[in-house]
Length: 358
Image (cartoon, rainbow, N blue to C red):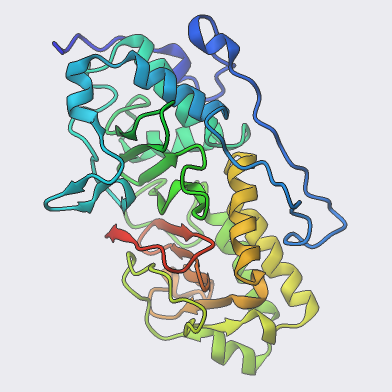
């Protein structure tokens, strides 16, 4: 396809953009089913038996199908792959996650995609997050691309054939790996391992990470640490942070670093649960539900441990920037040094293999 000059997309630029006009094929996109979490029940127990997992008819997946159908044969040669495509250097490409990478060469802002395709790509991105988190994610991308427009530095790929069986859409860039798969892999949450990052003001963030959209999650985890007694703190505090991409599943036998949730009091467990709720808060309801179902199948938070890492304490203030919540097939690794990187890997089956690189 011959590249055409990039055209501005006001809807993609606005931090508080109203819903895009759904004329053409997007006019029939239905709202995804949602599942309310009962405030009076523990978070794990509140997940219903039939959670609203993503399907090919979810909003983001409907947009993926529309995007795939809009591609020219030339575009498909570049950004579309078979379901289990192996890259000679990067392995199973569909399952890869990294902190700064391009899954394919054309970037969304490069002029390779039409204006209509850019709008659909924006719909996919927007559809993966809760409405209140959408402007926050735009802020993260803007901060991490030196104020450039949405789509600058992001690239995409489609695996399989939407509408004809298993498929997965992947978007990558600096501080970004996100997915939409219509629950093609029903034992894996979020379509596979994902990654977020944010350097809000500088590469080396100050203590308390001003302006960072994710830092409140770390503060919530640190509330747990403050509640621990001396013996618990000795177990929870680990001397050295593991490599950031070290997030494969350890399985039922572990071992898991840090303090087991089973060794916490009921009030401490309640704050761990509040931390978990904060972690899943950015995502659409279907993905929230699938995360919780995967965790429930492996025994819930009772099978997890919480670790705080002592070696990279920004500002030496005892507010732990690096920490990790982990279970048999659940890894949420938050690194706040020198700026925030978050590695997320969740499934119901610890046999799922990881393809991650820091």
